Length: 53
Image (cartoon, rainbow, N blue to C red; front, side, top):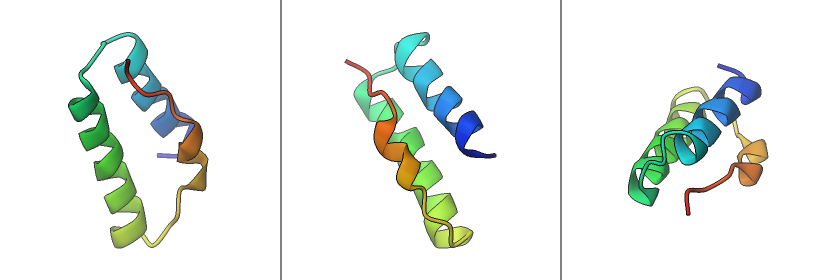
């Protein structure tokens, strides 16, 4: 998955599905762990991801 797909998924969770903050944070943490620890890729563009209210 590239930046656009991850961004779209996280924004869809926050805006359309109205998931709780903890669910959204868990998905974000899973992406960060997979990319940073497993693949060795930093995802600095995730700073702009919308968070659920």
